[in-house]
Image 1: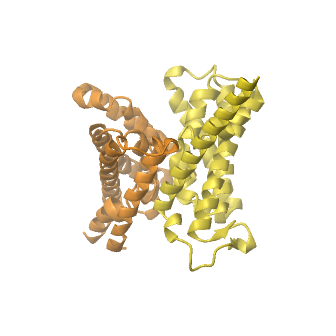
Image 2: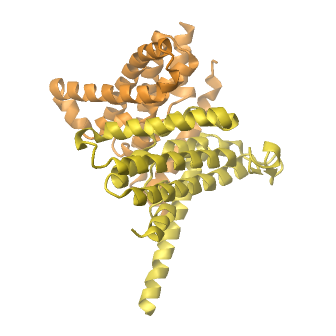
Image 3: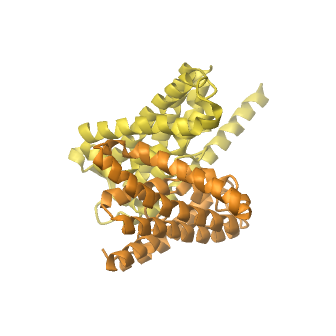
Length: 214
Length: 192
């Protein structure tokens, strides 16, 4: 397996959020502060990697007729573990993500990678795939968070830096509250996906020019 | 009575499942290219949500009796998957026309976060059997309302011109954003 290619795919060319368009619910709902974004990203990365490893290890034992039910049970098990761990050790994160932690069960990224990758590949490749896709997801969340938090509350690193208040970059009378509300979620994701499409096209043209020069 | 009315208004308008709470965005984006399929999907989801809310209320009672509350997520998702399976078999046998129209979208309802979401919210809010079922059905109707409205907007958006990199998904998301903005107007209705 080509790990470098997997990494590139997870981060940009097959990014779960901006290209595969999976896991939209959590992407839109919780990206209101950097703390939420990083927390959610890491939780999903951990669950995705664990479930990818287990599903890849069991791929020759699970009968194909009941595979979806089996995958969901495995995923739900790991989600419950993470949910309980967060409740015990990082209650603030658990509080602010709320119902979206148990909802990771139905996050299509995890089931999508189980069905599309882990069920056909070795344990090692699936583990790397889980980590790379997870990082890609976290990256997309963090970009969304930074934009929405800056425009919506005028701060950076809310929940993490400066005693949880974040560093204020825009005076408090200016930011548009709408950006941390549902409207802002849709608009920001639209612009982020458009940006990534533009970037990929740009890189494509550059690569072609390079090849032509050769 | 007041509680029921409050749940109806909030699930349909002020706390719309898709446009305010962000449950079920995947089918909202995926199945909204045509009004007919959007309507069919919405009604199927409404049915499953009401059924799942009712069933999971009972299941939760059993879990509490057994002191197994921490298994909620696992048990609920399995219950939802089997309900979807039963609905699928039932439709295939008795309403084949609707079954054909819904096609591949039926099994996908399992991974619709609106269904698991409404069940978890019911448990968190401590709704009784009647309120849980009504919340499920009303949430489903809110989902239907949003997806049908969005499908009709999207049919027009797809025919109009826009910058190259916004084509397809991004412009649809921005349209959804504007729809969400208009739903913000309902927040003044808030009863709670």
